[in-house]
Amino acid sequence: MNEVMIGMRIETLPRIKLANLPTPLEGMRNLSKQLGGPRIFIKRDDETGLGFGGNKTRKLECLMADAKNQKADTIITSAGFHSNWCTQTACAAKRLGMDIILVKQGPREGYDPEEYDGNHLLHFLLGSEIKVVPSRSKADELMNELAEDLRLRGRKPYIIPFAGSTPLGVAGYINAVLEILTQCYQRGIKIDYIIHATGSGGTQAGLILGAKAFNTGIKVLGISVSKSENRVEAIARLAVTSAKFFEISLPLGKEDVNVFDEYVGEGYGVISKEVVETINLVAKAEGIFLDPVYTGKAMTGLIDLIGKNYFKKEDNVLFLHTGGTAALFPYKNPIKAFIKKGESSWVKPPWSPM
Image (cartoon, rainbow, N blue to C red; front, side, top):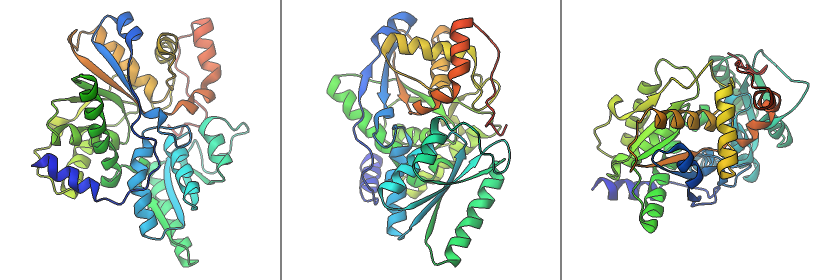
């Protein structure tokens, strides 16, 4: 009953097509052989097609539909300075004829680097109005102030919370579970684990809810990309809230949220030799590029868990590529140094607010 109900509920949600779906599901034969562990597959959500692609496009299909239904003319959202979420949201806004204001976190108020690179360059090219503040709380405060100012001027702003981690955003990854199940059925594959980079928690909440509602038996593993004392609680809370939104009765709690915090390193956006080695390994083995902030850390976690015999040899593990490849370029100098010189220190980028 849950499967039918949640499927029907999602189908009735307003939705604007922004993503090229389904994204490919591929085997990583070379990497699996090199690591000598379980069979590894990859879900290529870096190929969703909006901007440089990424997991956020799935979230935006319902969120932007809601914005259109509310006759919004301006989208306001927030995330990190080189945020892939900001890039995809700006692309979606422009495609739908809306203005976009990005409130980004940086080292200080009004930070404007001399060199534009990575996602920040893309935000600029997209014609985004960019505001930079030093903290998440300041970002939330400024977004509300900007929205109120626009309303006083007769405009219709629509605020999307940090990284789109709301029930409407979560719907994107409930849908993704259905997509994965269909692809696996067609190929005769049973997935035992889905592993991915987890930050704001919307993707993980959707995967957990989908995996449980559709009775898949899949265990969802999140690899943290930043330090947080309450990430597990926040993801569980979002999953429960989303289940209520979809009118689905499911036993959900912290015990359903599996998060590994030990691969964060020195913090969000801080690159290490281990992550660079992972990026280099996957590029050479599979011709697939990961980024230093999200997917590189997630794959580093997967490789380490394989080395610790967390999985059985016969398991099938699906790695979710959440995009963010543009983030490679601001790290070009430390990546080159780590690979050519073997440097092992952590490198904190100048745009980090942490």
